Image (cartoon, rainbow, N blue to C red; front, side, top):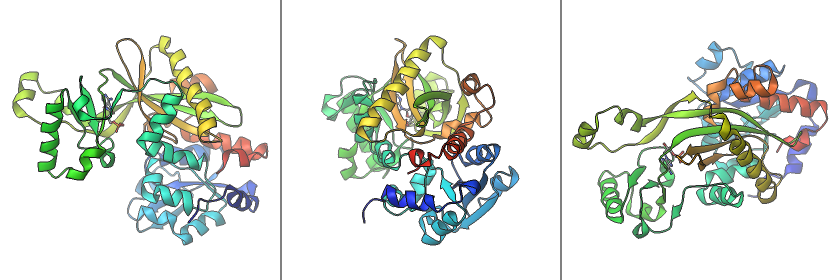
Length: 363
Ligand code: AMP
């Protein structure tokens, strides 16, 4: 099956009643403020939700319509897609939407107008493509090792199935790498054939900033919307144990995100923040036309040389935008009113409808 043709999506959009567009998304991740923001901009809203998980959307009163499904992945089912098209829905993708629907299905089978650039989602999902885009933008990334025998400084080791999860580990020598791999094999966290998939990168000892940008394709402008940093288990719990006890208990850390907190960065770093966003947007225009469209996020560490080192990119709204469901200091600076990422998305859609330019931002 081939990729969905943008012309097909545009002809569905042609049949929509533009006065009655519904903003829809999957009920997880960042859907509360996506839907709230849509209501603030005057849209009807719909949530596609796994049965039993609808309570937050009822209690926060952010969804006008509920499409209840047995499993989140059923959003891909033809009857659900038809219900969405019948309500003139524009779907807002987020991390859980892509994870549950499946990237291949989003590319090949999801025949509902979506906000953003469908093609760029693969670029954040595959580490090599992600690295290509960031390096091509001349943005600093952690150094990557192609062979564990070359480890010559502290590195972070990641496995594909465990993004942000269990099984990341830190090592400083090839021997330590092998020791830790053996522990993981014994615990059945990985299989022999996974070892060659290990992604080994320079460990960046710095402070974490996840920077949330919005690229307005209508205005050709990169906006800094907000920033967060993360609570990760078990590493954040481990560092509360005195050093001597840490050595004795021998716990292996993991890096599972359990929450986010808002943060601001020192003002002298803001030129670098804007420069990185601008560079990425320009490269994306060339490498994954038409490029970025809407929210994206650069996760970085700021090292002691005040350099922002980017270790991860999202090419859609990132979970950390939940730290500014009302507004952030940066979005307030820009808009002079409360502006969440969800509201910003709907503002763009509203502007596109008014200017008859939905084809620029829908995919
Ligand atoms: P990721 O799955 O790449 O988003 O990483 C999850 C977490 O692992 C991050 O939030 C960091 O705490 C940690 N981490 C990832 N990459 C590095 C790195 N290169 N240096 C230090 N810590 C890292």
